[in-house]
Image (cartoon, rainbow, N blue to C red):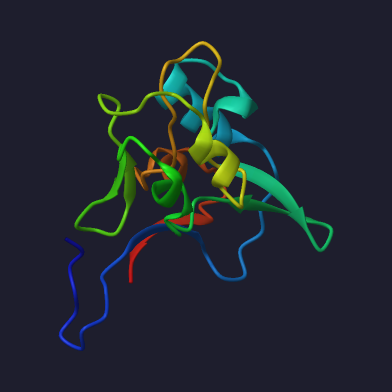
Length: 139
C-alpha cells in the first residue's frame, strides 16, 4: 500500500538530482552503489548510471515507474509504502525479464548473482557524491 497525502496523491520516495546541479562524472555514486550491492566497483553492477544529456554528464536513477514489476512473473517486485519498487530476493528467479523491460537500463542482473537488483533509494550514492547533487526526496 502506498501512502497518500491529504489531497489524495501518493507519497513517493525517490532519488533525484538537485535542480541546476552539475555532475562532474567522477563515478563515486556508481562505485558506492556497486560496492553496496555486489561488494565490488563495477559500473555494470550499479543501479545508478551516469549518462550524457545535452553534452553534459547526468546521474540517472530509477524513477520507480513499475515496468519491472509488470513483467515479473514470479511477483518478486512489489511497491512498498514509500512508493519504491523492491526486489524480493527470495522470490526472484533471476530470469532477467525485469532487466529487459526497464526503459532506462537501470535494472541489474549480474551473471554471478542469482537475483536482479534495482535502486531502492537507499541513499548510499547520495552520501558518496562529492558534489552533493543527489538527494532522496518524498513527493
